[in-house]
Image (spheres, rainbow, N blue to C red):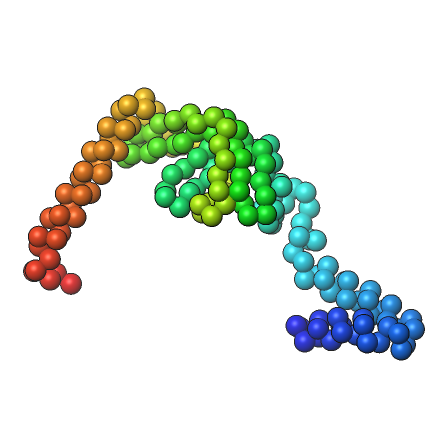
Length: 167
């Protein structure tokens, strides 16, 4: 397929001056091949799942997962070719066990290299499962600290028992 497309592409330049109308046919065929190979040509405006551009998400509520594990929610207002994004009314969603808190951030600019995942939130559905409990920011920070200390303790216990070589 790639060789045929390459031949078609080269045919545009090599055969067009020599064969008159044939070059135009090759050009038309090549444009059809590009249309067939481009999956976005099949997509309708309703097909958000096939979208590869952030433009379809402008002015919509998004969830942005960052490299450091933070989850940000907000309205996408702008983006560029490097996936740098601007979120309006952004908040950081902190989840610890069954507790969560949305920490307000305001207008937030995110550097594209830190973005792992961007997804649209369905406003018709609930954002969180019903068993999740919203708590104030101070309480979620205490829960985060307790979870961090717990995981550190597990790590030190594991290091102490390393000589047993459980593997």
